[in-house]
Length: 280
Image (cartoon, rainbow, N blue to C red; front, side, top):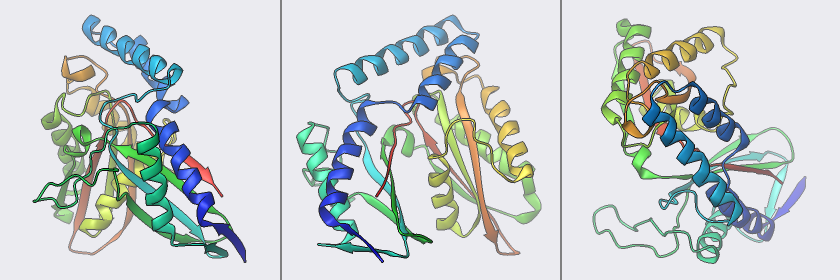
């Protein structure tokens, strides 16, 4: 049994909040540069160059890439041979978020109750998904999820007979309806199967995959490529101004489901696909 102390988690999450909000992951930056080269629209090319310039300034300062520093989502993969000392894992994550957002003056965007709308004042609580995995390590993946893109999410319970064609239609429709709201070029996470909430979680998890990393399942890898082509044919383009580069990537994750259902969820990330990772 290996121990990880509460304070280690707090400090790691605090630092991850800074990194995720100020530095684009290299794969995302490279994808944006490739999109700028490939974009057919002159306006779209100018938009993408401005996006890259903004990201460079944010990294150099450092300062937030986007004014919406999001609601923090953490995927915590807890090794079954890890024992956390000094406090609860979720408490440590929230304390790290609180410290990070206060220290670096990131916008506090979380309200305590969805209807009463009183701000919590420190951007907590985070949304934490914990999974138990083999081993003696704790892996944390953190993403500040802005709601310009999160608000464009969609879930639909398709009939099994609608099949792959129905999935494609729903994903492309979701992207088209989103238009420029999620600040394209976007990354699209698609979750298939399970139940309603499982499909949504799969779509969220998909967004953490590196650009260009295809599904290990051949039929899903093919579907990802075909969906990316279809999405980029919508003409939404960078920031919704029209063009050929509506999405940088489409990722599909799947899970077994019931014989009577075909749940599908779409979770969209803006061009600033911010995330950070640490293994303790």
